[in-house]
Image 1 (cartoon, rainbow, N blue to C red):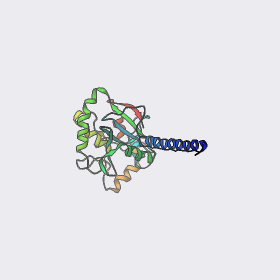
Image 2: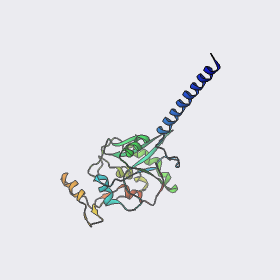
Image 3: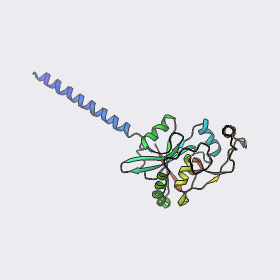
Image 4: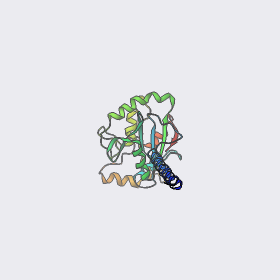
Length: 224
């Protein structure tokens, strides 16, 4: 074989190897894309999902938003198991569940929503082990589509509040369905409960993602 052919053969092999390595690198980056590079995630971190502007998400945010920087409609608890990470949360699909973190992030991205990371301040970190244990004990319960507290089903912020209840991290507050712009009952919620033959639970105890995000026991540490 001529020197040219030998050189050409080696060069082809080098190009193929480089191409394969580049492809594997891209796959590696994609598989880990959900994890933020600037934040070291911790067990018990709270993951808040930004609200949409319309539909149920917008209606929830409309009557619960307390801060301009906080506009959320969902929340979950991060659980670390060795190198794997999961989100403990209650969602309309599959109810109270333990979901792989990457899958959780992908679900939010598909809907055009972002995930913001909050963390209990250092003096409250001791509450996390029991809270995570409690959250795991609530898995399997159906989603509470009425948003009226009961012991048989949970909605997202209800699930998280219950997980941390023993340590009094969060508190239930009187729910309101008044549109702050008009001072009257929000039309979406009036129709929502009318279809269920239920009275709007104005003033009943409850919680919501924006209320939890406003807790002085939390600090915002980053986003995905």
